[in-house]
Length: 358
Image 1: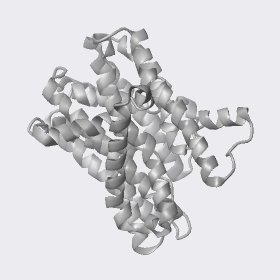
Image 2: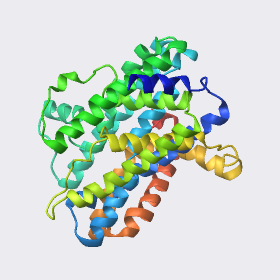
Image 3: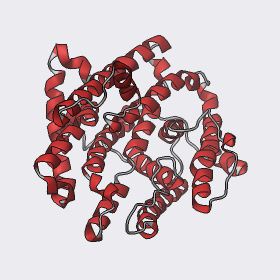
Image 4: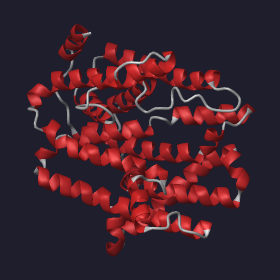
């Protein structure tokens, strides 16, 4: 295993950070934001529907499952070299301004929304309200903020590693985290064989696996042969996730063996998506109106994450059968994405509101 990793590292190219290559980041940010909306508009999947609805909802769930992992990979690729632009204090201040304020405001907004809709507050005491915010109990899709804060706090440590030494160190950390977080837990769930989980590495575990993987694949893209292998593993991961869920789920519930962002099929699939977009030349696409539209959507991506769930809930409340309809779970999700982009763009033009969705 170590020999293979060493051989793979030897085949890597020097780090690339050209402006043209960075265009893939904008494309992936927009695609990931749209994928999140599609996943949540497809919430009927979790009710374990029957027949064709089960098939279509499972396909949507599986195909767009890359959204969150790819987002963390983008964070690693774009943020780990922050010292080239500013010091750690400035980095943390900027990151927290862009995420902590929106997290707190929109969590409280969600609390107020649920109070208004349900006619009673979700919690009846200040400590419970605070706990609900910190545990994303009120708006559960805001769970991603906590691992994001953890990533921001961890990046300064990884950034201290000299650039010329990062390639072998990061490759080792990725391999160790992959085995201990993506392979062993999956095998435990699949086989029932228990082991001491303390063998997992806290250094690069959790979503830090994706952060390092994104930085690695972005800066040291593999040779054609290794890329083809990663693409094949990505396709295999997608099929295993989709077909495994269909075949293993009984009629009355969902088998969640594959429902974990750190499962190895998801890691393979997400890495393949990231790498394919990394290797594509997007300069022609970024010209003209398409480029301007993509830039607008990219700048509104955080707003899409924050706002879309409220529109999904409202449509489902007004049209109860919409949650089952394929038009809503596809075209409806795209329309909600576009609406969130428009609202976010408008908010960002108002100085007093700009900090709510920077």
